[in-house]
Image (cartoon, rainbow, N blue to C red):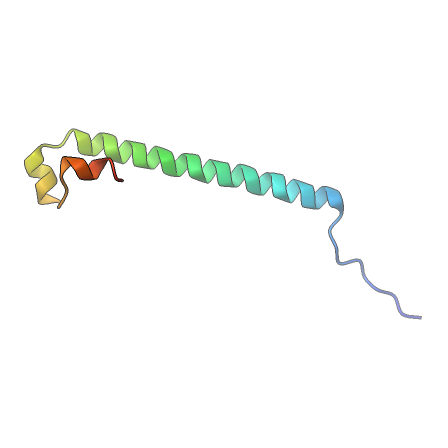
Length: 64
């Protein structure tokens, strides 16, 4: 008599995994947005000469 193992996760576990993945995705997007915001803020206080030294102009900042 052969038995088969249940290799499928219960519905609750799959649902929890999807919810956790959604929260992690949202957290990562928020963290990325915040890093971009801080970078733009730091670049905006630089002079045009300093921006030129790093190969940027003011118009490039909005594209980050």
